[in-house]
Structures are given as structure tokens and as C-alpha cells.
Length: 241
View (cartoon, rainbow, N blue to C red):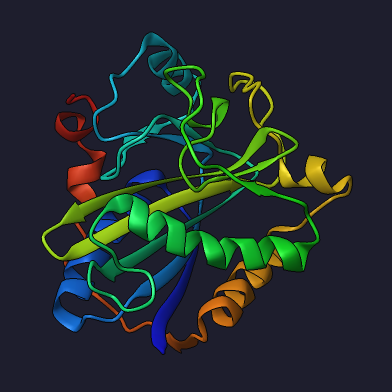
């Protein structure tokens, strides 16, 4: 099975969300899934599509930490010392599609399970929704996410528009420091493994994990246009609820 793959590296938060929206249009036309890796420069916070903008976000923005509203749901994710991915696919995709979001979550989780096996970290797949801080994603796990010794290791959220689905997710490689808030329910990959873990190591494991779990052949991603950058920079988008 062929998928497209792209690593856009370190980009600002507005580009990162805009590019994922453009990927939904691309997959709608081409029908081929896209696995994307990306990171944030400057460090930033993404908030869920329906999330209220709290005073803590305004305070961080005044300190130079921007935030952007995701097209996907869920709660706020800190992007500092993390690995972030997106998978864009059609709902009827034979490998990871499904009638419901949970159907796809369950299938996609198998790629990450293989990646964690490659990294050598013991994980459990969550089959339920935990209770935690109502603002921060990593305070509690949800369906088909992963924990290590009861603490959340990776978080994901998905949106569907017609026959196209976008899943975005983040794995914390190291624990964010000041000025970010402490997230008590999470564990970083470096903490779980008891050693320093590099971003390149995680990227290789995740790419190989998906290739091995699903028999995927990755193809280089072509250039695309019509990336709605200004939309994601706007206060109209980021402050709406």
C-alpha cells in the first residue's frame, strides 16, 4: 500500500495548522493517505477546535508563546520538546478508515504500538476516557491513546469533513519547562526510557512502525498550493469558540 510522506520540520504554529487543512483538500482529490511529521518554532500551544481561550493562554502569549486553534478537537497541547504528526486519509481507507472516529483510532494505534516496540518502551493502550485538567490534553488519556505506568505518553484528536479525516497527535519526548504549566498526568518518552531520546530517533521509529504494521511504502510528497496561512494567524479564528 502506498502513502505519501512529508516532514515539514520546524515551522510556526499557524503554518502547521494551515498545512494540515490543505492536506485534507489534497487527500480529497487524490485519495491517498499522507503521514506528516512537524515541529514548532517558536515553541507554541495548540488548542482544540471548541476550546475556550483562557487567561493562561493570553499570559503565555504576552511572554512570547503563541497559540493556535487546531481544526481537530480536544484540549490544549504544549509543543516544546515534542514530536507531532498528522495522518490525513479517507474514511473508507482499507487500512485505517472506519465508520467512526474510534474505529480509526483503534487501527492507527497499531502503527504507534509497533513504533513503541521499536523504541523499547512498555506501553498500555487505553480503552476509555480518564479524568484530568479540563484545559490540558496530557493531564488524562482517552480512547486508544498510550500510557506508560498509568501516565499519558501520546495524545491525538481527529476531525472529519465529508469522506476525509485528519488525525493530529503529539508525543512528548521531554517534559516542557518554564513558562509552561506543569502537566501532572503525563510522562515523557525520555522519562519512560530513562535516557535521552532524540527527535530523529522518534521519527525513524514512527515511520518504520507504520511501514511494518501496515505494509506501507512511503512516497515523496509533491508541492501543494492554497495553504490557508492567514486564516490560522487571524484572531477571528483563534479566539472563536
